[in-house]
Image (tube, rainbow, N blue to C red; front, top):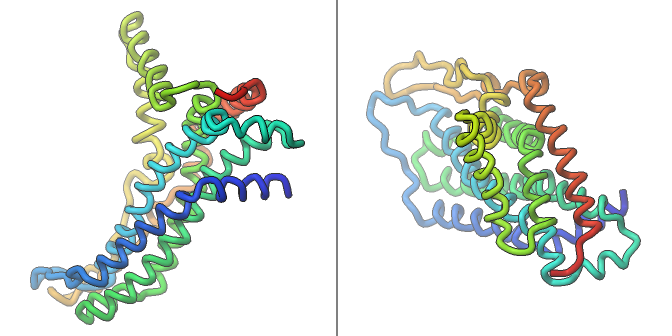
Length: 291
């Protein structure tokens, strides 16, 4: 356990963008809240309850999620390739640290550590933005941001995303690490071209699109359908107030579907595929030398 802790610390030391990127995003959003227009003009018949504040909080979190997804993909493609490119792999192989420990530590960094860092920064930035807006904006808008149930839902949603997305996209992460372990150059092209070649060959010889369908399901549509309910239910509740005085509340609890996610065969088929790819990445790492 101590070895893994130090390996993860090494990743944080060598990849300062892990915390710099979310810090910059948070600073930009805080500055926007300080100097931008923060009041909201709604029609007279529109509800002005806590749902408006909830939507703002979740929208701020979505910004961090998008950047997190892009950065994690880049990190996974670069993490094993960079060691060979700068020849630091020779130093690390001289230490009594197994290749399996190195690969698993980098995988844990991408799927656990980096999301947790983004979660912490996003939480702090959202808190500062809510404080600034509550001072600058109109009373109803500022008050809509300070509700304990909204903040609890925000924390729960972040943790749910970290766990479920980490499991669902595990085969994608393992593939990117495998590419990072064997590609000598153009790692991005190597990560894209083999799947495209398989799709083209299937289309040419069989006239089907099963590979494209499975890839699309894993990368795009599968996760929201598996981890969340198809029919969200009463996401907005309490919408029977008078016009202009709505007490609508926003609830994410009906959206979450942990049981459906854990019992879906696609979840664990992907995990099994990821295990095989990780084993291959470890073997390639053991045979790798500098570029």
